[in-house]
Length: 58
Image 1: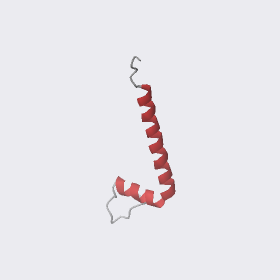
Image 2: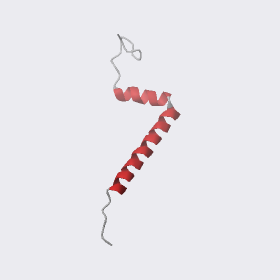
Image 3: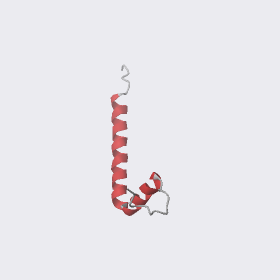
């Protein structure tokens, strides 16, 4: 079985090259998913930082 993205005379492209080609082909969807992932990760990190904040006696 051969990869449909390559021809028999070519070497297998790297994962990064395949990812970049896919990102160019699906531009808007890729950017949307990247943005949602970035927002989700930022929100998660902020939540963990807020829950782990030190409570100083006031």
